[in-house]
Length: 191
Image (cartoon, rainbow, N blue to C red; front, side, top):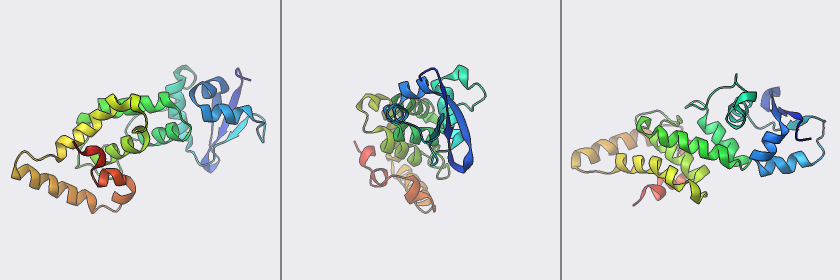
């Protein structure tokens, strides 16, 4: 069974092929699912998941098998991180938080929501999907540290500038959906 391929049946009828061994090694959730009899042989229904996110995730997990898939980037880091969380794929979680940490200099309050380039959106992704993983804390500190520095005031002028940016971001329609409650109240950004 481990040498076989399985077709992941994603939303909107899209599909992605994956090696069973890759899925079993990456995810205890998928290991359990693939250990059960599949409703249709060779197919695993993941109909709430995006095929593009799976393609990017599989390229990270097994690059030689998916060279045509997109690389991890700003356009898919959130969807790959959600898959990592949903299926408990720690290696993907690590790669995604590493991506955010390595690109912390690109984060800004001026980026529109729900872009993960928005500092509050990135801090929310880290809060929602990585904060329960103590081993990721050194990597998550890059994003939360950048947010803390952006929101701290060394003078009245910087405080007013930060307040104006926050007011603008908080007025965006996507604010409540894109910024976790803990980030909204400053939980992971204190200290």
